[in-house]
Structure formats: C-alpha cells, structure tokens
Amino acid sequence: MDRKIYLLNLKVNGIKSISQEIQLNFYNKLITSFDPSLYRIKAIYGENGSGKTAIVTSLNIVKKIILGSNYLLQMETQSLLKELINKKTNERLNEIGGNIDY
Image 1: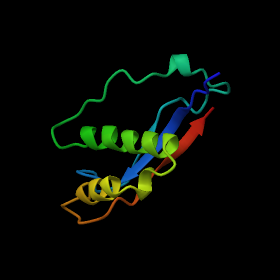
Image 2: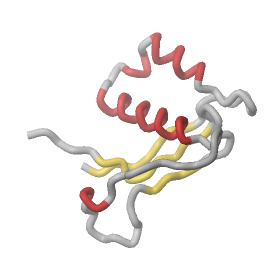
Image 3: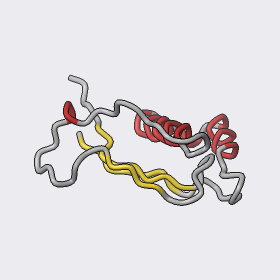
C-alpha cells in the first residue's frame, strides 16, 4: 500500500522573486483532525512578480527531496539551485521547509 504524504505548511525565502520569508499554511490550525480531502489547493494568484512561480518551484523541490534521497547531490540540482537565487537581494535559497503528515 502506498503512503500518502501531505504538506501542512511551507516556508520559503531567497528563491526567485521572494526576498522575505513567507509561510503558507495548507490547513486550518484550529482543526484537531486533519482530513486532506478538505484542504486541496485550487489556485495560486497574485500580481506579476509576486512569487507564484517561486512557490510552485519550491513545492517541486520539496517533493523531489522527499521522494529522491540523492536529489540534492545531483549536479543538475546544484545548477538549478544556483539559478534560483533571488537576484534583487543576491541571497541564496535560505530555507524551504515545512511539516508533513503521513
């Protein structure tokens, strides 16, 4: 049986157009019993340059880290992460992290 993994929240900083840390919560913290069928992302919207693509990119990185144990060691990954540095602040990708539920 396959295990399903649900990302409960995500913190992102220093990637693409995101120059300050943002945190996304994918569930209501007042809920005592997490039901993933009630909390599915329908859309991400915002102004041009507001970080929509950066959020999707960071979600993809988290997914690859969880599913592929050698993802961060691959040369292609290292090149990608260098390209994702926030050009305005010249900061590196400081943090992508979150909590997951199995």
